[in-house]
Image (cartoon, rainbow over all chains, first blue to last red; front, side, top):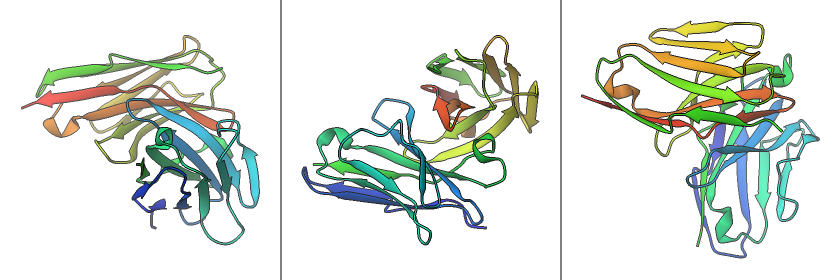
Length: 116
Length: 110
């Protein structure tokens, strides 16, 4: 059973470009979470999604950031018009459908975004 | 708003020593508490999960306790090894999210 997969592992973008980060949850998991780890800071919750639904996006910046988890395919975190302050490690986690947020969240290896 | 604090921020010990990492949280209405390990430039590895109704969990040389009423958890590492060197993160689940502490950076010297 493959774990949570994220790609790319490393992403370099210039200011103003778009960044797309992908997350494939563990098999059978229908809950996906995105977290951001800024340099020298802890992990911060961004968004919680179920298939085709955003459940909680209270941690997402109001502008330029969006997330989706379509019926088919991976979850996507999209950052438009990136700025240097978006440079961070972005982690995806998934959990099974039964317990929802009370179950263990399994983390992917992260995508390290560098904005030049 | 839930806040998680970890003490100490960094810890350096000689190999073989037993050690305790501390975590405190401000809102006791949690579903569970997890301890993670993060190696430099890597993802998170879940070490132990304690449900809110439990008092402790053990895995090998690791033992985690939870006192929900006082908002505290400890991670005890027995007979530390250089391979234990990493950042240890405490996180609580409340609502739809994990709230993480800033972590304790552990160095075990051979």
